[in-house]
Amino acid sequence: MARPHLDIDLDKIEHNARAIVALCRQHGIEVVGVTKGVCGQPEVARAMLRGGVAAIGDSRLEHVQRMRAAGVEASYHLLRVAGLSDVDDVVAAVDVSLESELCVLEALSAAAARAGCVHAVVVMVELGDLREGVMPGDLVPFVRAARALPAIQLAGIGTNLSCLAGVVPTVENMTRLVALGREVERGAGLRLRWISGINSSGLELLAAGRMPPAVNQARIGEGILLGRESTHRRPWPGTHQDAFVLHAEVLELKRKPSVPIGELAEDAFGQRRTFADRGEILQALLDVGREDVGPDGLVPLDPGLVVLGASSNYLAVDVTHARRPLRVGDRVAFSPRYGALVAAMTSEYVDKRTHGGVVTADAAGAGAPPTATTRTTTSR
Ligand SMILES: *Cc1c(COP(=O)(O)O)cnc(C)c1O
Image 1 (spheres, protein in one colour):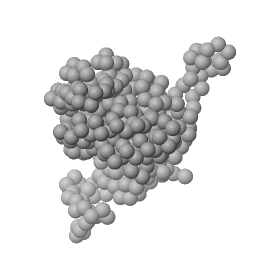
Image 2 (cartoon, rainbow, N blue to C red):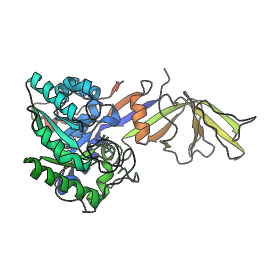
Image 3 (cartoon, rainbow, N blue to C red):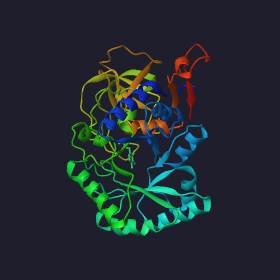
Image 4 (cartoon, rainbow, N blue to C red):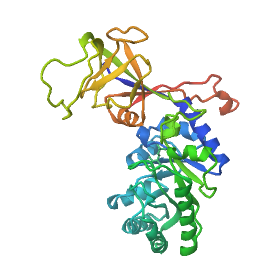
């Protein structure tokens, strides 16, 4: 069956994790490797762990359950605040979760008590990106109330930036986070294990040596998966940007005008589009569409190609200036940006092919099989 596929190079992911972990370690920061961008793909989680991440973080319980079921042993952090209806599953699946509602903490405490365990939480603070988090002025009373819960361990405070609004991490907001941590420790009389400051958007601040030293945890997804910091999507030094490559097949290849013929109304997705007249072009129609991955975020590896648009099931590409002439049946390779990666990983119509992740005989010790094995699996 003709299907697009996503090649996943586990060795590059491991390498990227190692590079980010080494940088963070220099600054006294431990790294939670974030797998939500790959739907908790177990081999990717293993590659991150080989690269030295301290724990695995994901936003969905299903992903954590998937990794656990595949035998990936790690400390798991849930990066999305728990739903009131999820507390028993949260307590069973993860060691730590990020939280911001007292009623949820009460329910988590009751669930942990029922399960005979203590559940650790990082209380999220709102520092401007307007996603999850307790307002700073409410933090100390919040933590005081949470401390009274018998089966909750307050492990830290954290904040998430550069997500909903794109607010960048700065010396100012990170210093604010640290000060809030001190206030909580004094005001509620406890020691916090983590000041969880940044995601991939904080790498530049960190590398510039401007991160307040008390920040001691980073939750990194994109930096490891795609080798980019996430404020300007700049390639991160010493990492690979091509651990993921999407391949789609050419189904039709024809010379066509670059401007549609006829009266224009909304397209299939309710948009009105405009077209620049570039004369006749050579247009390729590929077997990947919006149902799998949007047209924005797909960067052709051949710099001569231009993505024109996508319908549910096709991607149209101007291949007039392709470096390598294309024929029907050829495959075209794309580098997915983060949103496109998430979409491709989520689509059940895109095959995922992992490569690498080699276990060497040396690492396995004497008596192990003499040859390294390369596993190639297709899943989801
Ligand atoms: C997704 C997420 C991250 C990871 O973000 P990246 O930019 O991919 O590094 C970190 N923390 C939280 C709370 C998240 O939701």
